[in-house]
Image 1 (spheres, rainbow, N blue to C red):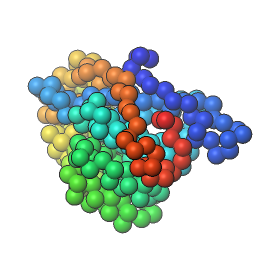
Image 2 (cartoon, rainbow, N blue to C red; image 1 turned 135 degrees about the vertical axis):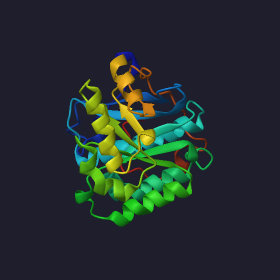
Image 3 (cartoon, helix red, strand yellow; image 1 turned 30 degrees about the vertical axis):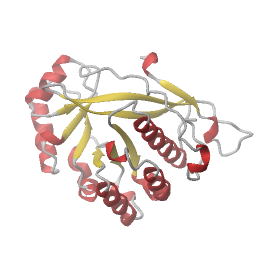
Length: 253
């Protein structure tokens, strides 16, 4: 698994350069495929931290850096379509920076997929969330939602806010067929049909079989396709003068 992960030092994220962070920002690419024909949709740039617990602000900075890295991958033609996750908090803090980065890549930004996530009750400005969603869709960028709660219906308010084209969920732990059917039924109640579900964490052939039987169309996990290390990218032509001011130094550079 280590060979599929790329690591960057978390030191640039430290508030005080004299007290650098000890830890890494890690990333891997998870292929997203249909479960029946194994047709390719996108590769998700999945990012997390090791060795430290990122604050809300640090997490937002990492996500903006990941967005920039994904756009550079598309520009370099090292990926056909890339998905990144942006939390509601990141959108509220750095919406202008997000839009400026998208505007730098007008020829490839439509090949980006944005997966939003968050708790609707904690949103301070629904206007900013909706404004970004409208901007993304005006640029033909697909918008999804990542369900983090144990039950899909617990996030109905967030789903109503985003109105996603698809939802990403973690595979149920149970191997019982009835449990998977109930899981899909609950998603329907939340307004997500099985054909619009991406189930992550499919690690066994049994899980893959249950997902297919439930009518779920897309999946991620080693049972679908193993993850791989994010491709290298090059700097944009024109150098740093073309880049908007970042919210922080990027851990990806």
